[in-house]
Length: 166
Image 1 (spheres, rainbow, N blue to C red):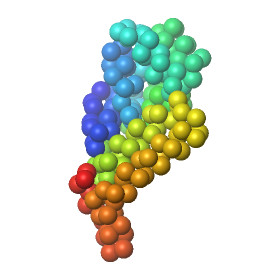
Image 2 (cartoon, rainbow, N blue to C red):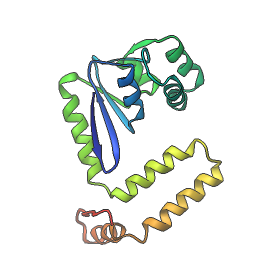
Image 3 (cartoon, rainbow, N blue to C red):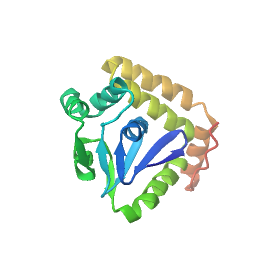
């Protein structure tokens, strides 16, 4: 498994066997891609509670229990169907796919990326009203940034914006 970081977003690129501590690390990533030949298993995880919690958030309680309690091994296609990974690509294309995704994210405003990451992570535990309040809080903060001004100027000048994280 390779970890790429782009603007604070962690991308896991899984190729081969992803089990135990590697499975835990992959689950901690924001986005997971897998080679078609990858396999996944919770067998040997060091922190069963943390792994179970992450899986329950991703897949629901019943599927998380089946994977953690049964030490079930599953292939990349099943990982995609379950929602463990977001994309499966041929093994030879995995590094390029992960790098292209990282490059795409790196071109976006870093402050906005981090705000989206925080909002999505918090959304499960918030009421709809609290989630909307968080979204408004992020919006009020981000609209005052240099990156926002750069985006507006670039839009009206019909050019690509350059973001600085300010």
